[in-house]
Each structure stands twice: as structure tokens, then as C-alpha cells.
Image 1 (cartoon, rainbow, N blue to C red):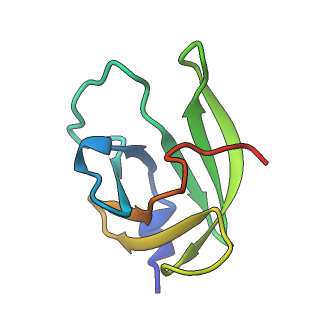
Image 2 (image 1 turned 45 degrees about the horizontal axis):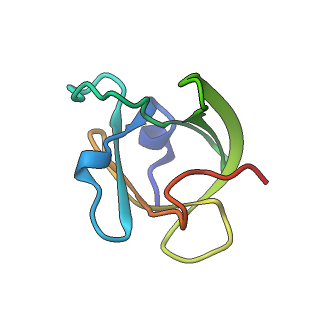
Image 3 (image 1 turned 180 degrees about the vertical axis):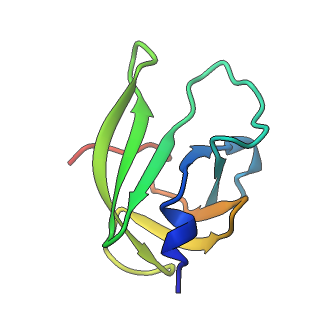
Length: 102
């Protein structure tokens, strides 16, 4: 079961350098995250299974999209939460690596 207090307490930033096969790694926005030439995706979770995913646009601005999340590796939500702690969030990799608005 996901600790929603931890999950919903911060903005999470995609640290693609830490991704592994099948997993995407996010860190709290307050963490020491390396600078990147490309904008990093950000996630803000809300209780009840929704989140705001901000993805870079062609001009590098972050565009918000509402997505659904759930705990576990299976299901039909946009984001599958595999692991969460105060310092690290792991989600199952999305098929394209980038969110595609529905």
C-alpha cells in the first residue's frame, strides 16, 4: 500500500539518469538533482488517484496534464506506483517514455 502522506507531500522530479529497465525514478523537488539541458517532468499527486503531470512542450515550457495513478505494477491507470519513500519514487515506465495526452 502506498503511503499517500509521503506521495502527496512534494513535487516529484523525473531523474531519468536513475531510470532502469521498466522503471522511472523521481526525486523530491528539494533534492540535489543534477542540472539538465532538457526540462524534467514533474508530478504532483492528489489523494484518491489523480495527479498533475507536467511535461515539456516544444518550447520547453512545462504543460500540465491530469493523470490517474494507482499502487502496483498492473492496472489501467496512467501511472503505476511501484515504490515510494520520502527520498525516492519509482513508477513503471510508460510505453512511450513521455505522456501522450488522451
